[in-house]
Length: 298
Image: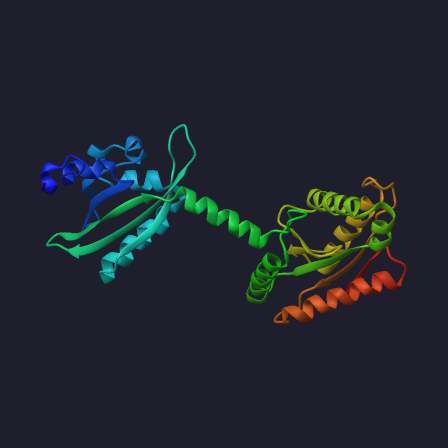
């Protein structure tokens, strides 16, 4: 029996609507006019767009359906057209009444007399992107407190230090340590100790500004990164944090959880590890003078 006689094998016209994606041709003329001469396929994405309009003029609709991703998509199109390279990009596509979907685009360009014609596929990769985001969050987040971990902290601090060096703007950090945390664990148990860490993380985020990053370094030690903040202002914020924490219960009694905090301001061009070491020295000074206090290093 031939393939043509077997009803389980479909012709091209019958096959395309069953694909888990969209087959398309996209044209851009030399004067910038864009349209989709061909746009067919399966999935639900085509239910939310006007294919007849896209066949005539795609410019406005592309900007609408790609939203914040529009500059990235247009940059990918321009790069592909200029160098005749495969077009590969992805964008978030809003669908009415449901969550946004992520769409991956892969197409090959070919020059024409009037412009460039791409032939390719669009696939819904929402589940893949959700999984990527979940894994990225695992890599960047402390499992107990939900705060950024050391890895994310160092990337953020490195970026801010670069901006501080380039623009001459202030940057300060706090090194925060819970006083006598081992004794607290011994008295109340490690589960209660974990609760203290989680509650403290929540309180620090409440008490500090939205532009500040609070991260857990490990154990009972935290770091707060304060962009555009000189040393004296950082010292005031740290003392406000210390005082507020000392007046709270945390499930172990008011005044039982206190903080020692070291603060320092970034010196233009200073190696990050030296900056952190100076802040750490300030923290040890706070512990040496009796804990539940803030020390600074100019």
